Length: 566
Image 1 (spheres, rainbow, N blue to C red):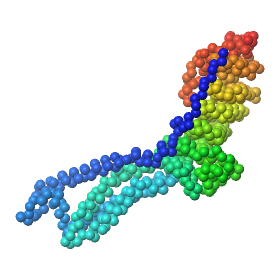
Image 2: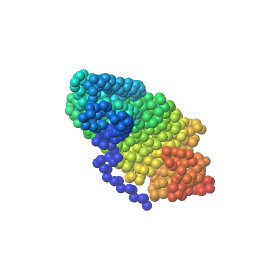
Image 3: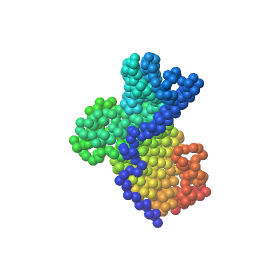
Image 4: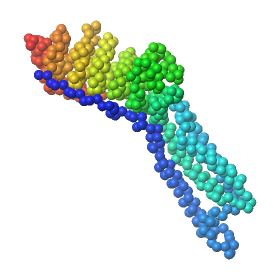
């Protein structure tokens, strides 16, 4: 009796978990350094300064009685005595006040210029970003205004007239300018933190993309150029961080590209057109894009196809990923794994929107990652990338994109053959177990292409060319037996027999070795730390119990000796 297949849930119209352009706003960063970060230090410093001055001034008044005054003059308050400026002596004080705020302004400009220059040498576009920030411009403007006011106040003094309001205002502004240095320097250091720079670039790209989607015909080119520049700036940050062995910053920049791409995918215009003239303005390859080296190097026909598919933004993001991947392959493999993870996220978002062209584009870049990894003979990275490939195909199965899932299985088996020919046996074994898992997932989700997936899986094994390939072939056969055990455990005997027929010509010694290896693994946890979380050869007890029945078809009995076929 065959177990009924799981009914698929209806596909949602809104991809769950995807970022919306309105969810990520440039003002988000400013909230982390809000009014409290400015007011608290200013109030504390001003309060401490006034308290200290008031204390000493009061002591002077109490000990000396204050300045001399006529006998018939009433006792003035301390505040009145302080504000009773002498025209002949206040001139030097006002001039010193103006010189002081100018000196403070010079210190601020010098320190900030040095910090910005150091950051600009490492991160592209920092100086432009700094000069466009409203808070930076406001602080610089404040100091300039106070300097000008100080000059004019010093000339406003006369021998018989003191502009008390102007002087008090100048004193207050100078006080604020002095205590403002502390929170402003804190803001500058926060502004130039690498992760904040990355977030600011990402937010700028999202904003430009949002404007570009709704832009008129004559406006989209400049917005395309700005978006393209933001993506390349993030790539430059990643490359510099990789060369400097700074994994945290490199990871942040890679994730920023993914966040931008997901936000864009959730709101991109529809691309269902075969006529370039009817394509949305934003999806066309504008003049600025055509001058970019990545687009200049493309074949004209490929460039035209890219425009018709409406995927230039995603193509550019993953093209940046490919450059980062190749650069990190020899020096920072954790970034390779992260690039594969983020590329999978892009493919899953495309699957949610049923964007088949973007899913295929994601496949092309995942395939390019695998090709570069196999050429470098980096087995561990290939193992990690293949894990993400499998997760992507599983997402396609859940979303009902059966044909695209089959296409992914076809690509995976191809690279399984390539790794087998290159004698990278562990990669071939990894592909076998991943495709076996996908065939099981295809059955559970009621995939129409399950039979074709099984055919690709059974074609994964190849005749041995050298003894070094023996372990790879054993791994493939183990994965096939695992799948057969699954089919038997749910009553799908016909599919299990299909696998048995494919293994009918295997030497009995190899079959005995496969069975012995599978039966001895009783723990799902591998004895080392792995990302997949489960031992390749582990099977649940109900599946392990079917091994004797399966191997009886192949003439291998319970004691390892040949038996009559069932």
